[in-house]
Structure formats: C-alpha cells, structure tokens
Image 1 (cartoon, helix red, strand yellow):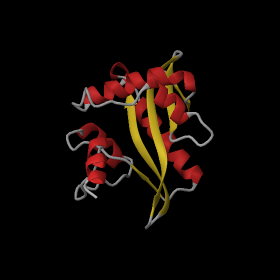
Image 2 (cartoon, one colour; image 1 turned 180 degrees about the vertical axis):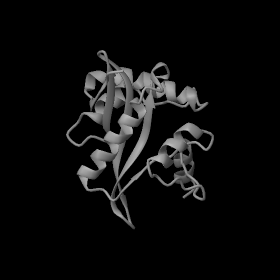
Image 3 (tube, rainbow, N blue to C red; image 1 turned 135 degrees about the horizontal axis):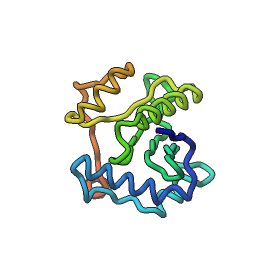
Image 4 (tube, helix red, strand yellow; image 1 turned 30 degrees about the horizontal axis):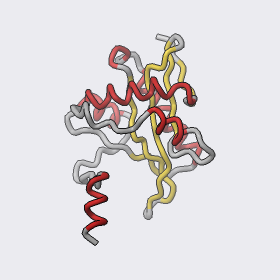
Length: 159
C-alpha cells in the first residue's frame, strides 16, 4: 500500500477529528471527546501552536494521524509528548501506524528532545508489543493522573 506522511494542514482537521472520535470508540470512551473542529483549527494553526500534527494520506484521504506537543522534564529537559496516534480501522495492518511512529521519533530527534512520552492502555497488547519491539520502555509501575475540567473547578473552589 502506498501512503505518505506529512505535516497536517488546517483543512485536514475535520478528518483528524473523525479519527479522534474513532479512537475514543476503540478505547471504550465514545462520549469523551470534547474537542471541536474549531479548537483543532485554532489551537494547531496559530503563531504558537498548541500541538504538532502529522497525517498519513492514502490516495488523497487522511487515514492516520499523530498529535504531539512539547513538554519539559525536570530530569531530562526537552521532551515530546505523543498524545495520540490513530489509524483508521479499515487501514490498520498496512504499516501506517509504524510509519507515523517512525516520523514522530525522527521529529523528536530533529528537535533535540531527550525523551518521547506517550501512554498506552494496558489491554492494547498489539500496540504494547509494537512499542517494545521498537525499543520503547512501557512503565507498568507508574499511574497516569488526570485532573479534569470539573476536578479543576472543584479544586479551585476548595481553596
């Protein structure tokens, strides 16, 4: 299968949002996506964008995406956080996900980051196997902590 990986354009964001929603269904969180097309267009394509987005294109249609952003580690310095990497369900198994991950790692290397971080669900064995095969270390003894929008409001009101 022929595909290309490129930096996303603003016009790609509607398809990227479809893929984000597809990922939410895959991760058993179909109602969790709150980001809008306007959010993606505004946040990703301003002078100081909130995220970097790559897309995989097959015959003119975006079939995969990787969304990442800069972070700073007090131990390592500059790092890159891969928020999501998703390939359309119908296109899985053709190497698109691996190619997107390869490009994320190349980008991180070109940016001089000392680490690339991402999360994976503990039941997503195919992804875990791929990441470990590529040399990533899956830290099973760390817990991810989220403080959501309502949690932030509750926290502030308790101060």
